[in-house]
Length: 258
Image (cartoon, rainbow, N blue to C red):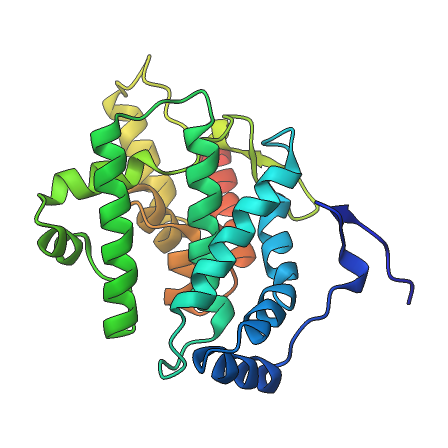
């Protein structure tokens, strides 16, 4: 199979070596014993990890070379701080750190400005989240992060929300060969939030007539605010299946109350 040449920041991706698990372990052992050449090999052997993360930002910046260098900074930080004794794959550990550097760069250089104090709180919260995750092997709650950084839960939640990526209302959020669902389709129209009693009764009757799985998914998605990924993990099916069932349920309701 032909290997296509793609250059970013002077790097020919076709020539990037991907390290296997044994090679990674050996190089980390050497690096922890002071071998800087091993560190260089670890960086070069994980550049494709950086590139895979940058794909989603291809239309977000005019200079992918700069973004690539920022991603590599995140990779280096991950290599410097990775603990071999933790039973975590390096890629699992490195991806959040690379993403963090990239998002921070885009936000600091973008048009949306966040107050310096909120940014500082967000960086402290993200560091605390990383430390707690490494310590306990699972993602901490907002309350646990707030306790560690000595802030209120609201301050932590607000700070972390401020660091989320902004996306267009017309960003496609699902497509499985059929109609594309856009973010705008999922937003509430606040100009008319009053519904008649007849409409509410019709909606309840329509919900009662849905298949059990469709009804459960719509309740969990729109009443309790769960994500498709959360439901997929809970039920034990793919996110694509959750999306299909959600769309099917909504289509059935529209037909029953129209």
